[in-house]
Length: 200
Length: 192
Length: 191
Image (cartoon, rainbow over all chains, first blue to last red; front, side, top):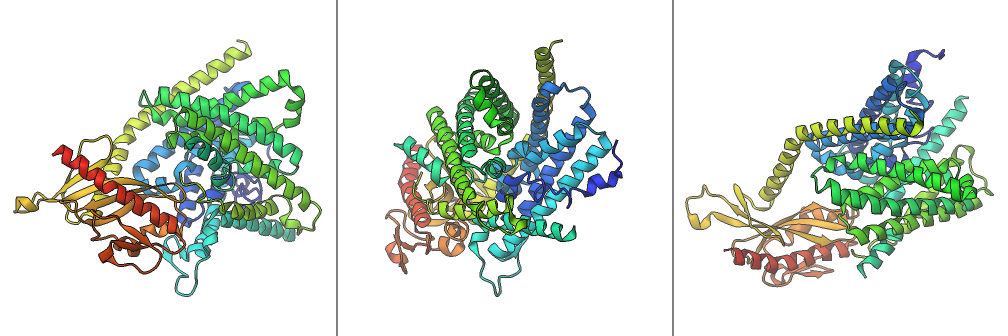
């Protein structure tokens, strides 16, 4: 059915089909939690966890779930894994959990997850679904780290909390406010589109 | 009086899209034309209000009483999915023209983080029944407002020369950034 | 089975499994989560009352007040180190949760800590800065704390507002002012 090598499905999530910059999914957390790089990583990994487990479970069950009720079943499965991730964070990373706030439960409606399930995991075998989910999840995480780093460096002068630019640079407060989020995201998207154009 | 302040605050001060970053996907997707943005906004408002009511009932009267707050996410999303399904069926039967107009966007409301976000915020802030309704209606209207403004701007943008890589989503995001800046002026207007 | 039955069966099965899995997970994690909350509270109290060893919650449904002790001190009169009071301010962007500590006779502020806030980072967010908080240390609880826009005098129970964040500064001050008399009344009633 698919002539592409398995590894393609892992790598495409990073650039070719980057969920944030190309598929334009998962926009809400991208804007909301990238005021610092460490929040970006936390959110990215939590989402990857939910993405991978949900995709694998649904891929395993794909022949058993009746088509008419698939969205309902998918969302319950996703919501379960999100709750698990949320409980885990609250127990072992309480500061991160507080910083991410309501955006952890909002992973439930992160369109990346439902998007990958609908487009891929519900129609492909477990191994490929796993790779697809992992690739998309890591691509998402990487993009969040980039956005978080840009906003944190320009907006606070720190990177992962370490003061880097503060000695000579006065931080632009706007970068860690909503406006900065939109600007950074839009600019990154524009740049990546331009790069893709140049490549082809 | 407090309800009135909550209402106004939900529309402009704590605007769902521009302050809370909720509901961005359809915000980018549907705000191209004014005549699709506004009906979408109203659909969202309707779903939001119903969600606010039903999740309040489920949360306060069942989940919290039984001490099972961890079932919130599953319960809320089931409510939202069912609600959207119901709205879809209702429109298909009774107002088919509207159903056709919404097209794919209606089922997409389920994954609109604004709706789940509303349910979660309302639970977090422990609003009472009336406050929840006001919050739902207000947030929905605020959402509609920002969509309408964005659509108006985008219709104008179509006529200008935007660098190709920035077309569509990228320029919408940057415009949203400027809008967010403008809306920041409303902060602190109402001390809740 | 017709479609509706299939739908209901599938959803019910999945929901039941999900429900069990989550109930399980909740039981497993809840101890640690509760622990975290206790740890965080103790850490905050230790931060606002130096030398704190133990605490006792004063029964009241109006305010959360802790009596803070160091029972290892030899002199029993000195064992009560002070009171830690939780109070809320209506800030610029939402509610600000503050833990303020006062001397055992309720005469002076020891210090306070902002536990939760959603103020604008860089502006109202600066209420967590030691420079801002230090202004309150040692101020009198019996008189109102006054917010001034310029340089302030501690002798007059004044503090300087954060420039660009007058509302946040005023909100914090108002919450503190209002909490002292209320807390004192509750503590006295409880003795």
